[in-house]
Length: 338
Image 1: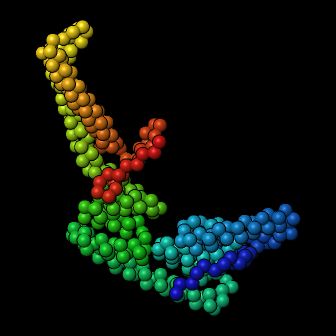
Image 2 (image 1 turned 90 degrees about the vertical axis):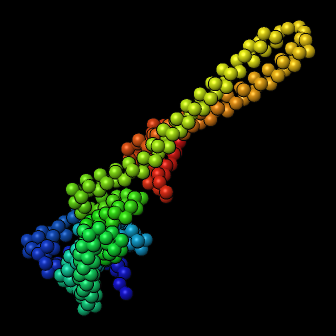
């Protein structure tokens, strides 16, 4: 059972056994002089109050599983009040984040502090031993996953990379997952994985550029069906407009006949029958033309949207509205907000 972070207990200026956080005799003399100064006492009290506030916020974030936010707050506390409690909490955050290199350094720093109880030393050494064991497991998994990836055996490499990431979320491990998903043709998941890798603070700039290029290529491939659909709809809309125009042109004789006889005071029975028939044909033709023009307009509008999505670059915003798109289940997903 991994111990939870200890609640903050303010400890002023605990000296470390390491040179990184140790204080010199001169610095101690300056600190004592500042304690005697009233303004410095007020400042120290303000700093302590700030540290207590940050600690409460950090504990809340840790309990929520927001380890990065908790780490940022405890790091700020430790910069002002270097004490074993906060050092332990920082190490726990790195451990939960599965950043083993940083966790190892943090636990070693914790164990180097003065004033630790035997129980605290035992807990620190136990956690450090676990970190080292996890690191060895991660290294073995990473080596095997890389070997399988070099052979193009993505099906074997992916679960190894995923298990390695659960032990140690390094940038190369995350990149390996993205590459495996890409190699398996899982474009949607690969785009997400590449973006997770890019967001890693230790991501190699060259690898980041490669990942961004792959994201563009994957999204471009996903946009191809949209382009085909868009141009097909535009072509169908032209057919619709053309059919509508043909129907209207074909009904022109009936329209001329009606115009020629509509003002006649009387019509013979044959003319009246012809007049009614022409009027019926003209009404039907105009309805058919209207349907063709409407369908053509709808297809043209739909085709324009498809073409926009098909040729858009990345996540874009449209003036007066927001249109965001990306890979979604089965292809490209789009959301519009006005």
